[in-house]
Image 1 (cartoon, one colour):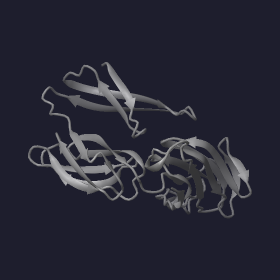
Image 2 (cartoon, one colour):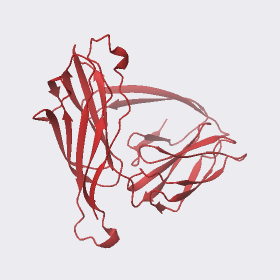
Image 3 (cartoon, helix red, strand yellow):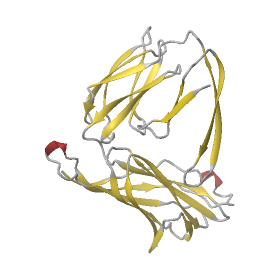
Length: 295
């Protein structure tokens, strides 16, 4: 079938496929993705069905069109499943906004406040029901939460015997164009450095990556491998900045700032270890921002 696809600007992890001339029937969607950095390929399939009696597509509207963290949003939805629970989220990282149940016509109305951690910029508001309906609107967050850039640090066993590898991924959730990003991974205690991705440099007992600029989206992962004797953790420190645009005045100026965040990886065990195998899965990342903004 003839179809067009586009990566959503608000969520680079989501690909929308539009069927140009849909007809009723059973279908199979196949995709082939290639990583730009490594060239690794991944294939997948999804089956679905279409029928002539399909209902109207879900729709959600948000007012006011611009808000700040803590402000109330008025959200209305139509075209969802009847008497269905709908989960509302906001931001690239899909922070929980509200949960509501539709009426007998598949509609809902709810007021929800913008979470304190939603960053500056045009942010998607997604609505997904348990009956399969989903759609997205948007709201402009003027003064958002902090930090705009967060890091995720996870550990894996390997690749060689007695080794662990830590993966640091960065996500700019805001509309700030950040610059002079420094990613510093300190060597774990009693660990021997083995290797790191190209572009890294050694600085005392740390590995450093320098990124000139970063727009909205995801960068990484940055990998560092160590030889260890048992369970170990990783500590990543990230500094970033934003310059005040030239020639701007008053409230039209975005703030200039230098800020930082910290990411801690869960414990990981070296490859070949049996005593610590159960503890080698990565845990959730915690981020602690240090804000030195000037307005």
